[in-house]
Length: 257
Image (cartoon, rainbow, N blue to C red):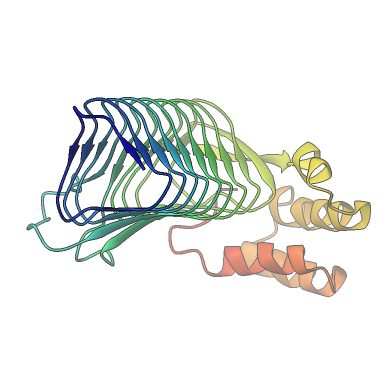
């Protein structure tokens, strides 16, 4: 463990072996930091935050702060950060709220680029990428491997599907479906994320099945429920298509079309 003499570490914080804390960094009460994690100079980790192993917190990042919610009354809420998470300069991540489940989560291997913001009660899966100044309102759920472009603003309670790619400067007000390329103000899908799926090793048959489902749901004027029934009848035995249909069926804000 290597702690710079100018760093402020609360007596109740728990730092594992191999943790490095830079000059003027602040580690608050009841913070837990896993082995091999590096906290750079002037970074701030506030109370009730758990950080996994081999993470890197860059200078001036501020995580674990109180939620920006006027209903928050100081209740005991947490932030949970997985392993190998990279949090760049000036990123802000808030803890949860009592009404929203009490916890904000970042899954393993996420990358939050400079000035990104994750609000209270957000749930990020594994390997989520948020580019510079991307912003999540409260209670946003982002599934595994989603990629959010720079300067994107995502409305509270919205969901981003797995392996979706949200183009830069988009305004997201409804759920964005898995496996799709989405952009615009208001953001909506503009096709399948074919390049991303190929890079991830998806079989050609799977990609073609997803493209068929996409055409039926998003490129016809068929009512959404009938379109989903048609997909179920025509495309069977493909887990990714099943996930797309389940995502749409479980939407509360509605899926952008």
